[in-house]
Length: 370
Image (cartoon, rainbow, N blue to C red):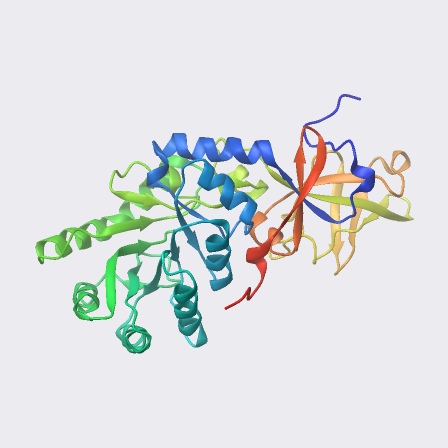
């Protein structure tokens, strides 16, 4: 049988379940991102998908110098990998504000911004950063329709933006706008919806400039909106999933020609009933937030149905039961790769058909050092 791109020659030495990262495919995805954006300076790649210093180093080597992240640990991971510019795309509350301050103190030469969307949080940041003798770098988080976070585009948003600029220990650089709720498979429909939702943001940026403040930087969208926002000359694009890609976005975002670069590796561990096999790919090894038929797609298995999962087991109904043996290996594409990566402490790096290295999924930790 002809060897497929995903097959590993030394798979007998690889434990299961495992996360596999195909390095050459990651690099091709990075190169395509840059080509689509026009140049690496337009990209602020989100590391929540990969969470690996090894991949951040690949991005840096490719000329990408700005990163977005979701957690303090991911921010620290970027710093450890050599990144010098990051936006923490969360409004920090509770102990997280102090943790960011300590991370700033640990890496004084790294630009670190976080998000604000209300005066109360701004006052807290102003006080705590003043006490630490630092200035908080911030972006105003804008809600332009997703209703997950951010300040709505109403008559109060410009005064809030002006208020942020008046605080001595806050330095507001611009706007963060995430519109990940638009995921239509048809690109023209998705782009039309994204553009309509962004009209209010454009009015806000014009109002900011007319008020005498500097033109704001705008960090826009994620992977679904990447192909829309890259058409805006003055927007930073922050895709993340396309570095590794997955079944879910591959199915929906067909205008984006990225390749699967991360797979899950599992083995058949039982054949408990005719027509039924069990694999060691349970909830702890693949993201399980979607319905049972939207979790994994196997590349080297046909005529199957994933019936159920528990913590350590996945049960499949198969059509070629007689041909399958306990111990056989299956290679699967995650439907949602981001939370799948987060389930692993390390990933096996695949080059030229062999597992050659292991990279730590450092950003998956809740806390690294601060």
